[in-house]
Image (cartoon, rainbow, N blue to C red; front, side):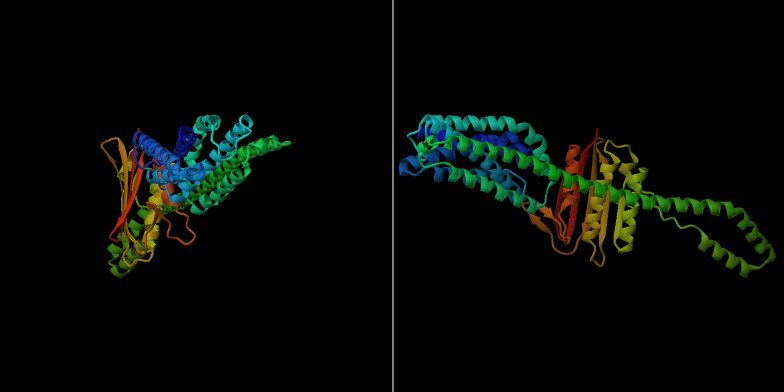
Amino acid sequence: MIIEFLSFLIVFPAAVICLYPMKNQLRFRLRYTLPTMVLALAAGILLVSWAGLRFRIKPNPLLFCIMILFYLCYQYCLKVSVNKSLSVFFSVSALMSILSMFAASFDAWRNPTLGVDSYTLDYALFQLGAGVLAAVLLAWPLIHYGSVVIDQLNIDRIWNWTIPFSLLLIIINLYLRPVKYETFHTNRVASAVIIILVVLLILWVLLHVTFYVIVTGILQAAKVQEEKQILEMQESQFISQQRYMEESARARHDFRQNIRTIWELYEAGDYASLGEFLKKYIEDLPQNEVTYFCSDHAVNALLNYYSGMAARQQIEMDIDAEAFDTRLSVLDVDLCRLIGNLLENAIYACRDMEKGWIQFSARILHGNALYIFTTNSYSGEIRKSNGKYLSTRKGGKGIGLASIEAIAHQYGGTAEFSHEGGIFQANVQIPLQ
């Protein structure tokens, strides 16, 4: 039982590796999550070890039970979708299966008379040591880079496609281990097995690096597209503003001549001509297409763009943007991406409503935090999966809300979304330096 218990300890470094990329997705604080998970796994390992000894159950089925227990505990502690947690879980399981095969190869070299159902102290210690080494080596890349992918990639089908690869590695390792260790000492079997294991390990690393590069490329392209769209909106508003200024300048230039004409018609008592002249003069006055919402030109242009879009769709929009009259520590490009996603989602939600409405408010509260509140009516259904809101657009990928969360987290803030009674709310809080 002691050796079997030691062989199951590989679950602990595996659990730590699984938690690395989830640093921002824990449902509870790490100081509560980690001890709870360790205690649950320790109790589970003791229980299945006793059951194996009591009912003479082979270790592999017992390990399978422990893995199920760990995943249930793991998913409960996370805020991410099942797709993400399963992808990480199976990926780490594939890595652990490769390390277990290295341990079995070492055990076969040390104990050639044993076989697949034999678990020795050499096997258990080598496996545990390899797992701890993997946990140490993978800590920095998974915490710094893996968490970026977990936080920002919300396309379920991409996560689903990673699972078959991990399952394939697990199956290969299960069939790679011989029934009798004597086989390792036949011809060049041992060398071939080690080479295959090294290749599988390198393949595991390369595929994860490739996955990260591809995903960050997708996310960067989406970010560039957002920024391009925002710049186009701002350009449109700046052109409107420039046209209004030019028309205003021309009107001021002609004002003196028009006053003289009005006075002459009044002196002549030609009130009919005076009325016609004033009517035409009023019609020729420039219409102010630009509303002043705040002193931040980029944000003001963006708010004008969406205000005009809402007006064209007969959506009532109320905007309070006094917070943007203050110089903020948030970059304009990030602020515009955040506001743009909030208002675009709100306008889309009101698209089919007879009397849709949107309330947008940005305030600085307590002098040290920016709060952005968006409340809007919506028509149709709300789609959610594992606590996350999904896109309702045809072909939509739900990147908008994920982008809002990513920007808020980038500045140490939070983004919360909720809906009730036909009203959708988005609350963003960003600490100010």
